Amino acid sequence: MSRAHRLLAALRRRLGDPERGSAVVEFLGVSLVLLVPLVYLVLTMARIQAASFAAEGAAREAGRLIAQAETMADGVAAAQLGVELAFADQGLEVDAASALTITCSVPDCLTAGEYVSVVVATEVPLPLAPDFLAGTLPTTVSITADAMTAVSGFRDG
Image (cartoon, rainbow, N blue to C red; front, side, top):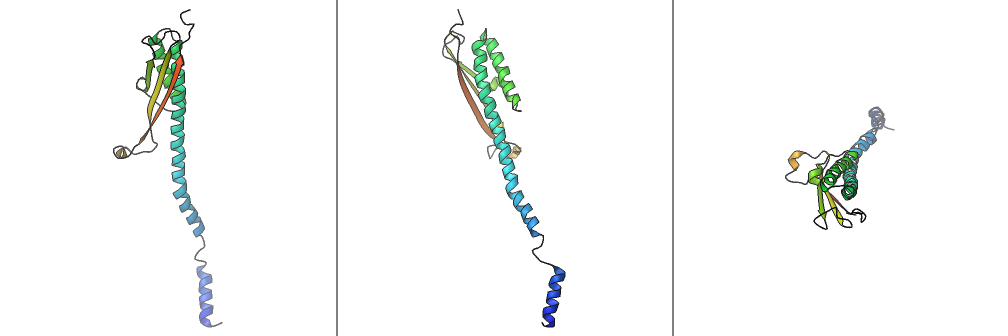
């Protein structure tokens, strides 16, 4: 072995392997590129699913509360409270007065044997969406649920 080869071998031993330690850096880089969007996607989908679950339950229970109420005013007040509670159970806030729409098959909603239709609609803001994007990109997701409930046929009897 020539002197140049021995010096080169000694230099390689002293400097070490150029690939040593780069696996950790590559793993961290790839993890950040893949993991951050994945975590954001999971958080966003969980929030949308929670709002959908709350809207479905709120619509169903609001219809039942109205159909069982003594007066329409009492039924609407109970339904609005039910909508607020359904969303609060999922950690979301909603304005029940604007989210709740009630329609009836006849002018007097509490007529025995008739139907009450309830629609709950709200907007769910995307988590961590900056305000300056609101004009250019959608930063909310619309959630709508409806339910139809029959007023008891034995109500007047």
